[in-house]
Length: 165
Image (cartoon, rainbow, N blue to C red; front, top):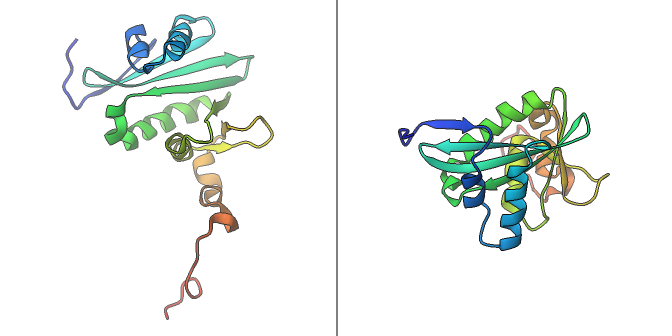
């Protein structure tokens, strides 16, 4: 099926070929992602396409009746489309957050993943193991200071707020 290069579409379940294409070069990682894509009883997959090119594959693993763990494989070609991908994620995940607790795991060295998670609305959660981020319903606007780091952000202001000097 050929699509125009600018058209976006979502395919669920994601084709295994797409999951494999975005799995990277490591054999262990490829096996794990392919196993997740095959495990449709506990893992739902979604492929996000721009035209005929797969930009991302999202994995939703169910843990109990309420918790969903999200994982993402992303194409290098998606770098120019982060704004669109973040918006698609917000529209999808906020609806899911009405009835589910959505978590993701992001390694500390993955600064790009942390930035994208913050833009979507995830927040690091210190009560779980390190690297666990939680999506809170409406979290993208509830506490903007958390994204800035609050008083620890190192930002300096000159003069008083609202004043001209």
